[in-house]
Image (tube, rainbow, N blue to C red):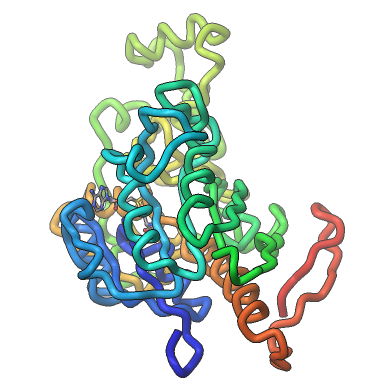
Length: 370
Ligand SMILES: C[S@@+](CC[C@H](N)C(=O)[O-])C[C@H]1O[C@@H](n2cnc3c(N)ncnc32)[C@H](O)[C@@H]1O
């Protein structure tokens, strides 16, 4: 923390900077960031600031500055040995170990990890849960960390998308921080979350004329899909053989909902890094095309002045699909900052961010920060 009281972040696996943008909106400052992907790094550099492009495995901790916070959205890989007995040494070879290496050296006040929902059930090679390994390893780093995690729904925080992320927040034990994950601020009925209110992009908005063309097969199929529909609208005889086989035995394949085309009155589904129409809500509701780069950026809650830089169109879709929505990052950041402020300045009289209890019909009584 500097004299102005700004908490400093070291960001690992930073991508194009969705999470970091949200944390900066919440009042943190990123002082060091890293990603291996040159397209994501170029976008990060343009919009947020300096980033070291390269494999984290090749970076010496001595070249990373001291900080208050370490944040990381590491790709998950199961460990090869038991979660309960793991030491940092045993976790070698996984990208997660790279986070531990930095945390062990910097001893930040708080660690924030984000990951996909699947991390809740991923097993190590010995059958133990990866989740338990992560908690045990963080707790074991001197002087010890208190780890909390929660599955968060992005639309609860104003992101116009049905997207889930698991977030871990671990405070250093000696700080005795009391932490609660942020309370929802938006109900699912909020008009600001609906597709129709998101895709009305004005002409001339950056990245709006960039549309990744669909494959010939998808191009032939999607005209049959109604707004709000899915592959179930496509006549059987028009389906390719693989989809015919699935349609013939929907029970066996657990009735998948391929080629979902969200309606303007719905909240869009998850935008994935692959951006394939078969598995991701990426088809425009009324035009027979993929969403543009700007449209998916908006669905991920990136502001229109955040510009995606790359000579590869698919790389832009990938970095946006990989990102934590900035508004989710902001909500996490505000909750972490509030807890840190209270723990580090217990006599603070700053009442600028008070919690009040309000009633939101879907959630009953919740706390809102005003
Ligand atoms: C899920 S994305 C992170 C998204 C980011 N938190 C955001 O909000 O935009 C994971 C990132 O890890 C990066 N990555 C994967 N392996 C890496 C490595 N060995 N060293 C550095 N970065 C790596 C990928 O390029 C990708 O951008």
